[in-house]
Image (cartoon, rainbow, N blue to C red):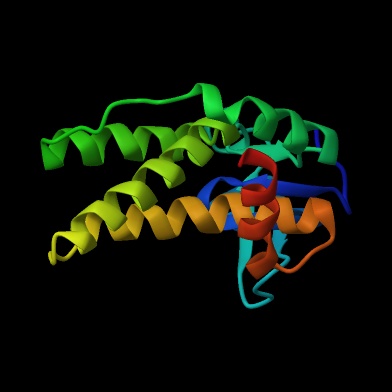
Length: 165
């Protein structure tokens, strides 16, 4: 159970603060909801039914700096193969995003960046679906790392690079 003022990660929506637990009537049914506000975009407010396990399991606590450094120290061990079939690749990469595993997301970002370099060096344009996935993965990871490390989102890539090279 989460508490008011907890900072959480809400799936692909990013870092949120639980501002309240309130009763609301949506669709004719009165329930308790976590009221979440995005830390990086105060225009976004989310209402998460407290008793809906499927939705609540998309909430998770922030990682710690020690967890970030541990993840980064083991990241060079991962070298998955590129999936050539675009629809299979999109499906596999969406599953990685859905799971929200930081190790997998870092590997995904690295793989997409390496593929982008390869494609661009061949004077081609990367697939828009790969670029969209890269953007989503970077947003998810960089927001959480920036918040935990107390740095700007744009400084996270340098932090990661410094530790994995």
